[in-house]
Length: 361
Ligand code: SF4
Image (cartoon, rainbow, N blue to C red):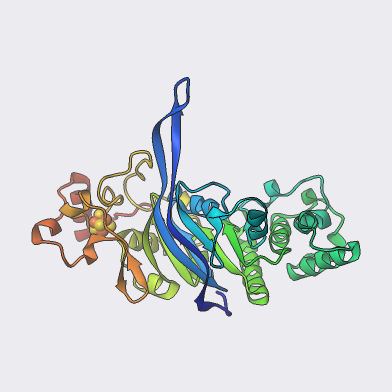
């Protein structure tokens, strides 16, 4: 958690981010359908905070990270960085703004050039940017960052294959922060590492955040890690925001049935990833053909009639705690509140009433 967070200072704002990937068919590659990877996602990241995005595989969290960095262009919506419309920038202005936002990859090995020494890998961003005029200044910066991430200076002229997974991730982190960015997108930064190494890398990220005033967008499947590191958490499902709140509210009093299902499973999957476990009965629906109404209704044990017809909007249920669920819509009629008669859901309801297992290991 960022000790120096300033909740009055917004460093990054995403507004109505949407990403549809065309599925092309035929000789002329005409789009026959679209993958709805992201639908109308909005949030703010404050300076010095860790904003986590969590959900099952395919929920859109990595696409959100890519759209923020413009590694993929959003279909619509905007990303504002330090008050500047990042999505509208081109050429020099885009190159300059990109120095403020960096990415830490899930798999450090594939992101490091095997033919470059550690010192050159870390220095590459400052070499490209031309940040330092002399070789001595550049080398001093590399050494400073190596020490900050806990890499022995004796490793300067070694190659990536000579390092363990945890050390490689330290090299990846050093490379990401060498230009002193304001915001770092951490895309599953510890999920490829052994459990014993994960805690060390997480502690390092926290130390660096406090030292350099970094803001993080932290993308993860691992709720134990998210609970530890986050200030704010956004829960996503099928490309949509389901719930958004500060970490303490979300973990103490989750509102959305999907978040509740994710959190119920934590004690059983400590240190394991959500994607490795089946959280709920039924499969995640296809993003090419998302369900009508609430996209979660095909798996929700509390599904009402209205849920199959009308998509719930994200709204503030308690101060600072947002949720997209009709359960909190006081304007609904009694008829709309009736439970759905979907046979799978009725079976789940019965199982819940009798205390039978609904979640599967
Ligand atoms: Fe479940 Fe309905 Fe809420 Fe969706 S809107 S999460 S289906 S109760």
